[in-house]
Length: 151
Image (cartoon, rainbow, N blue to C red; front, side, top):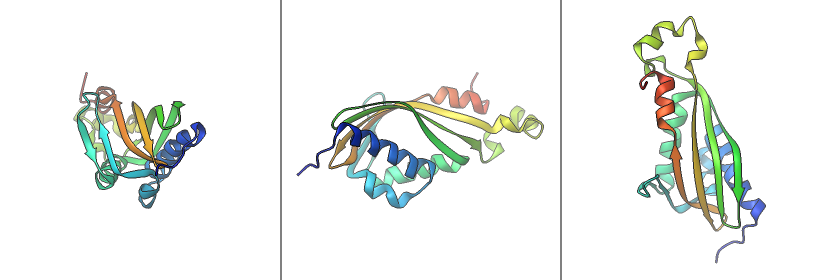
């Protein structure tokens, strides 16, 4: 039987997940927020991730790019079992080697060059009080530009 999720509860589940898992790195919380049958689809509606383990590995990989990553939500619209939200992952790149050689050369003089943000939009479908499915689109071009790899 599906748990009833109120409008406020649906948004709270998503923001709780983003804070607990993405910002704080509390991966033990995955089972509280992510449904066992979780899938993430990209902008072409192709499955990118399937299951809690794939979700955890992906979040860990992104968090590993940053020193003190922080996930923020700037806009959120929620219904009974759907939440649409605009997010931003910010932090300092943990390894300057991810920057282009030109940016690496000035990094010691301009330390904020390593401060970047990665933005996107997601729509989450909830079931049993957990995120069952997400459709996400991220601005990967802007992130590449900040790293100096795309002009």
